[in-house]
Length: 413
Image (cartoon, rainbow, N blue to C red; front, side, top):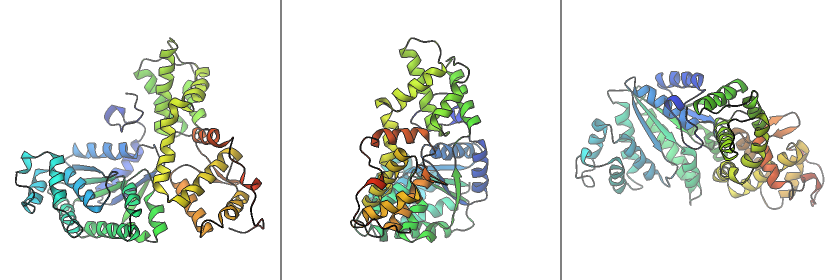
């Protein structure tokens, strides 16, 4: 088992998700369209790719389209065309209808060139027709087809920022739903996944019915036993002796079994042993590496990702609210009901619909794994994220209850 800290994994490197794969495969085999959800860094892309690879070995066609970089619906159709390019019986039929842009045979062009040529023939009036034809060809293929659309929510958020973005998001999701439902008994299944939540996005836009055909499968964190087994397997695979209790100490330091964080912790412990000229890792090393590596400068790239994705998923006003909530939860132990009242009073003069904004923002923060609800308010389930946010804000975040406000009357939220 190789140490992996940034890429999706498969085969012998894939670990600890057999039950989730069983559930997901059963939904796909029953021809359901699936919304794959879960906190960040849970390995959703790895699970989708692993399922696709396993189904391919059983005679399925597996198509994977990462649309994170798309800026319009035409770009999404281009990515779908690139994904379908290796399936000659489908791509050849698609090329026949676009001879003006594709003069060569499909075999003579790469998947990337095929997508570029398809994109040249698409505009605001034609992408629906061609995209519908593409999805229809997949549905009537002689082999069952699994299509994965990865990072769909990021694409929709990017489109939402453009003029008329709400209408364009509605238009795209309505088209996708209609195109998938046009061949109800077809042999094609869709998995939609992404690192920001799709359901909170459509709820905020008031169009939750646009994705009501998607069957949700949520991927949660590993439990303690699975996290410990993964760490021990990594240590054995890399011939790194570890003191008894190291794997358990790693889980306790993290506070939650996020697969990427377990992998990252192992990689940094291994590097620490090499740099110190040590042959093994001790329990004491866990605390030092946690403080100086995971929370230190070298660990920033892992953790800044959380803030970047949050900014991708929220509009400016709600992003400001989210940062206040996270700073409060990290430095005060929880974002309490009283702090919620103070936050509403604090921002009431600069943002409209504060109760709605706060509720929407909390929905995103919980859905995407930053916070979880408890008896005394919202807290970080991940000790690593809590400590990182606390380190960033403890010296310059004043508790919401201590800030001057124009109106200190208590309000019910």
